[in-house]
Image 1 (spheres, rainbow, N blue to C red):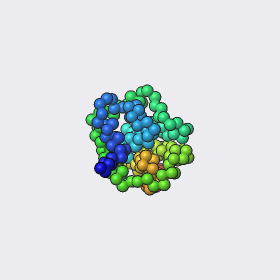
Image 2 (image 1 turned 60 degrees about the horizontal axis):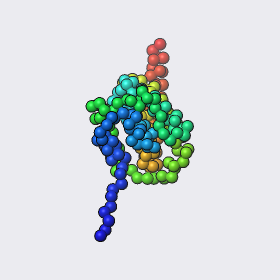
Image 3 (image 1 turned 90 degrees about the horizontal axis):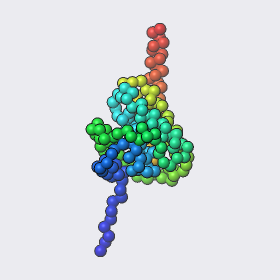
Image 4 (image 1 turned 180 degrees about the vertical axis):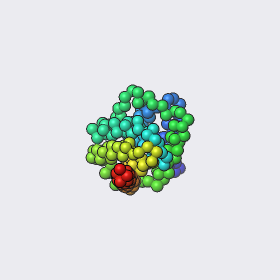
Length: 204
């Protein structure tokens, strides 16, 4: 008899399983559940909210600070996420957080259907983690300094989300798309900022 083939477990499956299981839903429990994938998954989560095309008014600054701390750990070569106990206890169980996580999981699933390993060997070098960590810090700074209620944090944050998913999928094409979005976001932010400063200077 032919053996039944089983579908591989995807990141979307793992996220849905974690969301559906009993127990607390905190940053700490997410780290424990996903192990060595936690860095990239936390970047997807922490940058997911500022990546939405909605003005956040600086409400996501704590997330960006946490992301920058994680990026430093990644650059330093850590394989396990370390977070202060206070941050580990940040709850993800609220109604708004759960809706956000469900929407994020749907986005991951859609991208999974389009993605496949491309130049996967590039993601297995130590240098890949260093470059990824530096790009995360750059994206965090760009999103952090974006003027409140302008939505200029959206593209840098979305670029980091795509880069993080590229690391998980080992897909160079998704990584290239993330880098392009990140660069466009930073350039747009700098250009509009310079234009605003010039406009104010001309009025003085």
